[in-house]
Length: 503
Image (spheres, rainbow, N blue to C red):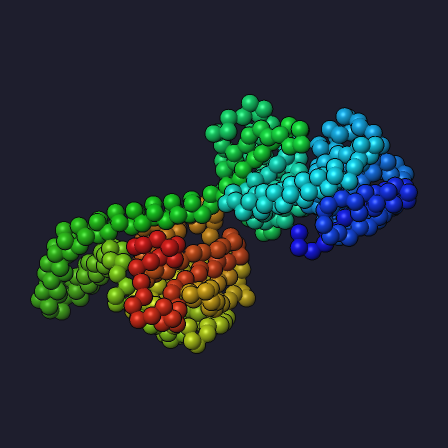
């Protein structure tokens, strides 16, 4: 070590402290700073503050405390200072217990020599460096690792486990592992971690509860037997599968959209032409019906329904948009928002909905103007319908619509929050699927959100939703910021989605 080694001795015997100091002076350990401490509590504080590089402890201390007690306490608190226990004469029982509670070495004072002291110090410091590297590796793993007994009581956890569960690793020590799962998963998880004959290749799925926000998330749990300081323990690996499942859901969603696209292409060809002929004939009949008002009304109904079917086919064709952003360019979100608000201003005024807009005027995104109008309009209309539903449910007043933008690295997130009826948890997972709708028959085709999702996805963006039933919903549209594209140079790679996968 380049700096002097800071050595602490915790011993109630001042004469012993002096003899120990003399032995250190005769050893070959190099430069060091020595400090003797006769009070166990003071020594414990120094250890917990890691005010030394190495600590020797006499087994016998003042009061009811022993050197073993001090080592066990500071080790449980995560102190990494190597500690060496000193005993009057060799005692195999104390030797074994010292290693079990975390001591780096055990020395008998009646056999202590300067060379043995130097060797013990050298080995303890080298072992401490190795343990620190192992600890670093332990914390650097991609999976959460938790060491616990067969009752699930946690004795150690790595940083990744804390990140997954939303709590600091230190605060997990002493708690029960099963307390971090929901009620349905606790029994299964406890049976799994208590199984002494556990197959390390077997794992279970469970639902965890993230402490920081009480949000549920899916995990996989692997558990195997583990020996720690001679004690039989369990080592459990926790893997957060939420992101993987979200990716799988996106792939499945894209497959469904592709299937809908094939259907739309067939419909456009097989139905579009006959519909055009029927509408043309209806127009001719309308012109030839002269003053027959009833016939004209019926013909107008026929043409209106034909137009409705044609519109449905056009909506389906939007799902077949090629994911080619070549037509996309810099679009001002503020301009689009105000244009769309003009279209729905009458409905908002009629419902007495307060509108708040917090959009940065410099919010330029990679998009196409008309399709972005369609996306925003679809979301605003849905918000208006949700507010109407909330009013029918009894919440008549104090409704609001908040449209705001936030910057996340190279993307702008446009958020639309309403105070409507909200969306049930069951429906959220189906929200962007083609033909899924919660509206009454004849009032919705189930293509609006699916089309909006497809359009935004074609620009390398995404749409997500947060909702609380009976309170309201927030839709987030994430799109590439134009200034970030400029920073990347004149030929940016636009064929990359937000999840990093090539399109």
